[in-house]
Every structure is written in C-alpha cells, then in structure tokens.
Image (cartoon, rainbow over all chains, first blue to last red; front, side, top):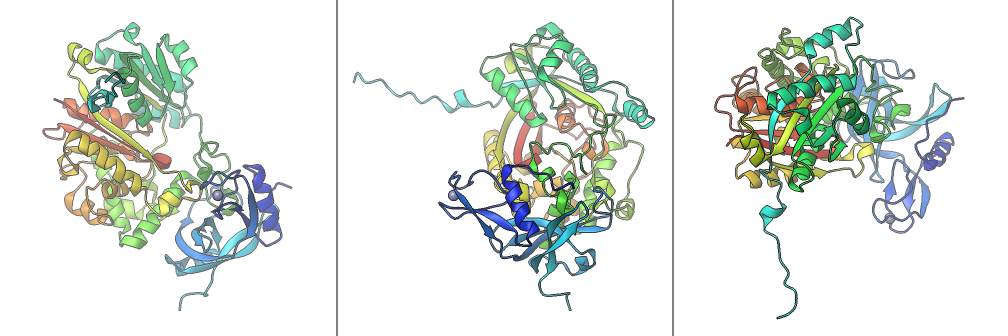
Length: 134
Length: 398
Ligand SMILES: [Zn+2]
C-alpha cells in the first residue's frame, strides 16, 4: 500500500495521527510556537524539543482554487483546494467537497473532517463550519 | 593617540552600483526550436542551447572566448560540465538563477575575481518533458511548497499563484478582466518582437476570458510558455566596457530581500503577496538611483504567471496596494501605454527563459534595438520574486 511520501522523519508521526482521525502538529516545548509542516526545529528559537498537539480543527478560509485540468491521479477535475488559517495560527492546505465551492468566501469558518485518499490512507479535509450560505 | 584608528570605508567602496555593464547578448532560435520540438524533434540539449547563445553574445560584444575569465551558468546545467564543453577556464564562477547571476557577476567583478563574465543559460525543458506539476513536479527538493500538498490535491506552481490571485481578487475587488490586461498587453508587445514564439498569435480580452481555466481563477493565457532555448550575456567591469567599443548598458543597482517564513504553507504569498520584500527592495534601489517608479521608462517583471505583474506593481509603488486592476486598465501596460511592461512579451508570449531573456530585453531597449522600442528609454527596472526571493535590478545608459 502506497502511503503519503514522507519528507522528514517527523511526517510519519503526523500521518499516524491523521490515520486516527486526530491530526496532530508540533509545538515547541520551550517557546510554544506551532509549526506545520513537521520539521526538526522551532523556527522561532531553534529548539529541537517539541510535543505533538491535536489541532482544534477549526479555522477560516484564506483562499481557494478549482482545478479544471487533472494533474494528480487521485483528483479528477473539477476539484477544489482551500487554504485555511487554523485557530492555532498555522495554515493548512487541503481539499473541500467541490459542491461547497460556491459558498466559499474569505474568512468563512471551516472545520476539519477526515476522508480517504484513493492510495489507501486517510487525509484531513475541510467542510464549511456553518453549513451552506443562506 | 597610539590606538589604531577605526576607518569606516566610504559607502561607495562597498557599493556594487555602476560597477559592471552588459556588453554583449545572445539567444537561441526560440521560434524554430519551438516548432521543431512540437513536431517531436530534439534540436539539442541544455548545453547546446547555451552554446548557441554564448557564441552570439561573444560576437555581439566583439570579444573572443579567451577573453572570458568568469562563467555563470543557469540552473539546468552543471557549472563544471559547461566549463568543459564550452572550453573556458574561468578564474571564478558558479551556477545561479537569472537574478542571482547578474548580482553574482557584479560581486565578482567588484571583488576583482574576474573582469569579463559570461552568463550562459540553456534549458531543454520542453523536449525533456520537465514536469511543473503532478506526481513528478520539479523543484520539490528545494521548495517543499511545490510538492508537500499533493496528497491533499494541491500541485503545480500555477496553482500557488492561482491561490494568491483568488485572495487578491476577494480582498481588492479586482476582476479576471483586470488580470487579462497582462496577457493581452504582453501578447501585443510580442506581436512586434521577431523572436517571440507567440508573435503571430494576437490575443483579445475576449479571447482571454473565453480561454479555459487551468487552476481557476487562472486561465490558460495566464500561464507561461514551456519551450526549449538559451540566453547569454557578457558582463564587464564598467571602465573596460567603455573601451570595448559597443555602447555598454550599465547595471546601476540591484538588491534582494527574502521571505521564507511559513513558505511551505504559502504564508508570505497569501498573507503578504511578498509586499514586505517588495517594499524593502524598492526603497533600496530607488534610493540608489535617485528616482522612483514614476521615472522608469519600462518595467520587466518575472512572469511565470500573469499575476506576478499586479502584485509587483502594487508592491513597488507603481500604484497603491489593491489598485493594480484600475492602474493597468487606465494607465496601460501594453504598446502605447504609459507604463510599458514586459516589452518583449515576457514568459507568457516571447519565451520562457526563466528571467534570462528579461535581462537581454533590458539591454535591447536601452540600445534602441528592441522589437518595439520604448521612446527615449534611459532606465529599465527588472523585478522578480520567485519563491520568496525578491530582487530588483535597474539598468541604464549614460
Ligand atoms: Zn521555540
């Protein structure tokens, strides 16, 4: 089974937390700064001491795009990708059900749900936190 | 009073301003090679495109290959292999992207490492089928943002700019027709440029708006060409350049500022549009030359995607933040416009030479040898902000 490609040893822990439906990101043990994607040290203080914290899963839309051309086997067009600012202050980029695209707007609240990637692993996804626009 | 005196060097001793000049330029036959590659041909490889361009730049400068004592090659080729194949024995050299190459040449000349630097770029990206998106996207090793989000559906450099463009439109009210000014204006410039791949393919705003989306809100015509080719420049210490015979084009100043914090998740793009870097660099270069954005005769912007242009125009003070749509419509950036932008057609319509052909276009305009010359052209500003490295270079003639 092909899992997601790991870009550092720290990615493994993150993907394991995603598989459990409780995505965790790193937080510096010395200064409290969050970091995503996972990495070896704190960009604020260079400490390598960290802990893993489950994300709140809530945030706000920063931007989005809709692909009208297919690039990735797992994502036939049309497909929509959203960049959101999590309440933790880190940006998470992932997809949303294409049907929700018409209701997207900057600063609209979103929340993280978990879905399946065709390659056989789970991923965090977004959905509008307050349902479709009225 | 026996203590050693601290001597503060005069600012001019540290400055790279007006130290170097471009004395020769050359390029490969982009149009012919584009046609050949589309028909399945392989005219040559990256080194070959570089060689064709290098030879023409030497001829243009009126010097021999043996006069070259510094070599800078573009990122598709190895410095060592290029030195071997091109038969040059540099006293100094490296591999660099186009902006860094110009700055490195200035530094090496100032430091006395060499006097005549050849900058040689060749890229067989089209015929070699280099992938800029999808599972095999290039550049991911250095720039995690190009590959990290693929499991979630985000890939391709165009998509990263589409994300910026969507947010810019939402925050400022800019429209797709506003952005269309870039593709339409540059295509019109290309119509005058005999070397431009899209020379004979006029583009109207209606054509632009009815072209398919790739990553919405970006249309097909917001994306750069992908083609094979090469570009070369010869840069010399300025007093030697003056004796060379050909009218030198002075590299008046250059500066850089980087934004990498949170770059994998696009923070400096989405939260800042790289404007922090634009501001620092613009203040530095405009102070160095003693004039501002209103006084440049043309601006050349690295345009892998059209939206580089509005973001740069806002960040460098050509217009206010959020005002680029109205500015491009009312001021005009195409032929006849008050601010000529990418007068060669740029990456969208001339040739995708990763910024290298923007440098040679600056030289052509300042020599009065462009496809369509900007009247009384004395100063040209180049701007790039690829993956958070914000650069600007100002070229001029005395
Ligand atoms: Zn820390």
